[in-house]
Image (cartoon, rainbow, N blue to C red):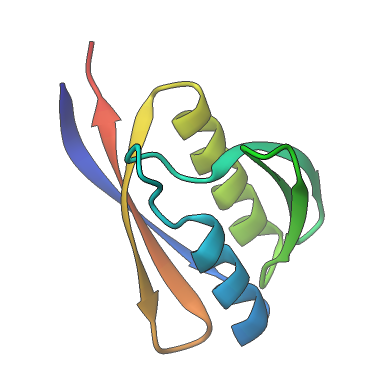
Length: 104
């Protein structure tokens, strides 16, 4: 059972990084996302591990954005949140990640 939507605004360093992050959060056939975990967090850069076991770096605007994305991915991985959708916002290379809390 899911409830309570959460919106996370993440600002990438540029348009290319925003497009990369958007593609990594695309919904798969089984309604999951391709992102599996966070491999590392270094300043404003996050290394994301995908289901195919490859890793990809995303550079964000600052450490706060990197930390927010890190925490969100960990909550999804640990089953506390479920990814719902992602919206590209036209200003400042910003995306909105929408998730739901999973209630047991």
